[in-house]
Image (cartoon, rainbow, N blue to C red; front, side, top):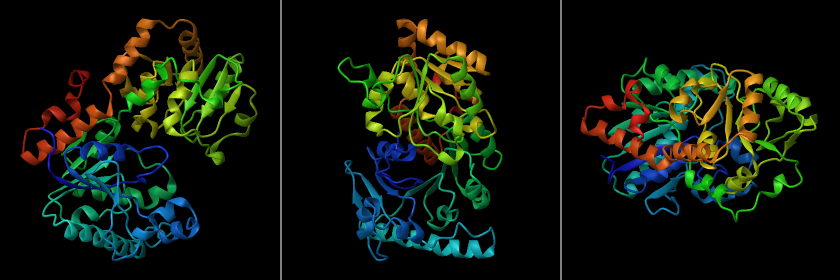
Length: 417
C-alpha cells in the first residue's frame, strides 16, 4: 500500500535547484504525487551566505531567510513545497567537542523553529520526518516528535571534514530512527547492526530521460564535436572515485580510442598526466537535461571506479542511465552486488586487461539483442518503481504490516519483475 494523504517533512543534503537532481529530491517529487511534502533544503551557514551573497542561488532565497518568515517556495508540483531555513552558525571547523555539540543544538533549534512555523501555518497535526543523509543535524528526528522518523542512508561518509563529526552523528540518527532505508547492500549490513528496522531500496535513474539518446533526430552534443571516434565515455564528476591507475593503463593500451570525461573536475584529486594524455578529452560539465545528447555520442560508456571500502557502498545512478541509452557498459567490479540488478548486461572487470578487452567487445561485437536486454534492465530500475517501493515500505511500517519481504536477504530480481 502506498503512502497517501500524509504530511511529510524531508531534510535533504542538497538544494532543490541543483544542476543535477539529487536522489532525495527525486523521491520527494514522487511522494508528493499523493502526499503533502515539505522539502527542507540543507541549510546555508552564515559563511555560505557571505561568500555567495551575490550569487543567484542566495538572491533567490534571500526573502525566505528572515527568522520569522513562514514563506515556502512553490514548485511545479502543487503538493511539493521547499522550506528554506535562516542561515546557521558555521561550526564544522570546530573539533568534535562539547563546544561543537552545544552550538549545534542552537542550529538545530533554528531549523525546528522554522519547521514549526510551517506546522502552525498549515495546521498540521501529524507528520512523517525523513532525514536523507543529512548527518549534520542528528537531534531533529527526536526533537520534532514526528509520528515516524526515517533515516535514508545513500552513501558512506568519506571525506575527513564530514567524518570528523558525521560518524558520531550518523550513528546516533541510525539508533534513534524508527526506520533506516539504505541504497546499497553494504550500507544495509552496516546499519542493521544498530537498528533492526533497516531496509534496502536501491537507487534508480530517470530512464525516460536517458532513453532520449535513442531518438534518431536527437543531435550529438557539441562538446563531442571534432573528437575522433570511437569514443569511450564517462558522464559524471571527475573525482576521487575514479581509478586513475586503471585509466592510465587503458589509455596507453588503446591509443586509437578517444576517452571522453564529461563533468566537473575536482582538480586537487586528478594527476597531471590525466590532463596531458592526447587521447583523453575533458569536456567540462554539461547540464543534466543535455545528458542524452552526450550519451548518444558515446560508443561505449564506462564506470572506472576504484575498488575500496567506500566504493562497495556505491549504487551509481549513471549505471542505469547508461543502460537506458542502450550503450554497451563496462565497469570495474567495485560493488559486486550490482550484478544482481544488471545480470549479464554489464561487463564488470577486475583488472586493466579485462577492462580493455571488454571495451573492444562493446565496440565491435555488440548486437541488437544485447541492446534490448540493456534497455529491459534499465526499465526495471526506474525512479517510479523505486519511489513506489520506498512509499510502500514506510506505509507498511506505519500499518504494522510484516515487512520481511522488504528485508535485505529476500530482495531479489523477482521483486522487480
